[in-house]
Length: 149
Image (cartoon, helix red, strand yellow):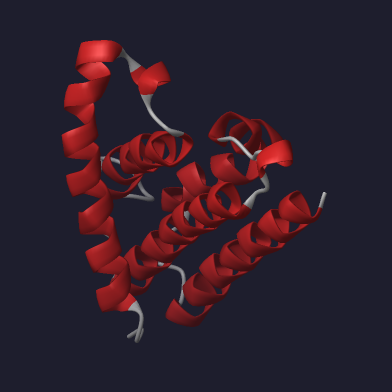
């Protein structure tokens, strides 16, 4: 279905494993003690758990999830994660990009990521792919303008 599926799945598992390790630190000393990249891990893992892995069989949008929809949602989430990590890592010291700044500036896009699951599973595969590819492009463009500013 998608050549990047294995990479996306493995990155997702990696994020969840890292989040599991970081939860101990958060419980002991609080989220404020985490570095910016670790805060991204915690929040993106929450999106994965709450909006990708959790499924509600009693809703019209979530009673089933075709493979193109699963791959599309995963691609959107992982793109957000990788672009956020890149923006934080590549920002100069005098203009440090923080996760809080990203969350505030791109709140509308992060909300779109959270709402990815609401696409009707009966939508044709080509439209599903186009929908999620559009969101991926929006995220990439938003991070380009964020780091250029």
